[in-house]
Length: 129
Image (cartoon, rainbow, N blue to C red):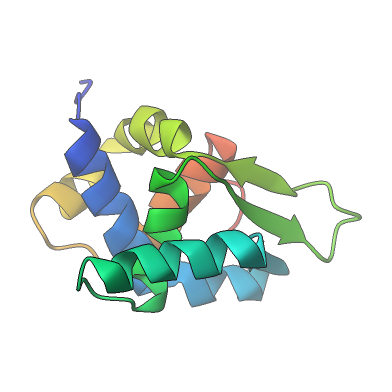
């Protein structure tokens, strides 16, 4: 079975995943990185629109602004360092293993679901956990 998501759905599920599971990545020796200038520009844009400026909202805005987010591999000589753009979110969230994708769709997702979606977007496969 293949599920095709809209861009908005993909963004929503990725957003929920970073809200629920971003800290899980540190258990794998991964660290989220982004250009500080992009972060402040994205935050300012959200402030000007009187929208939420929580960390996850700013991360999504960084992507919407055409910039990237990077997972840095601090344990395996950088083997799993990988950057993504919004196009990766749109393309890869829907490739999440069906049981986890259905949990996201049915709003029964948890930290494990989020972890799987994040890995799917960055690596197009599940590597850790």
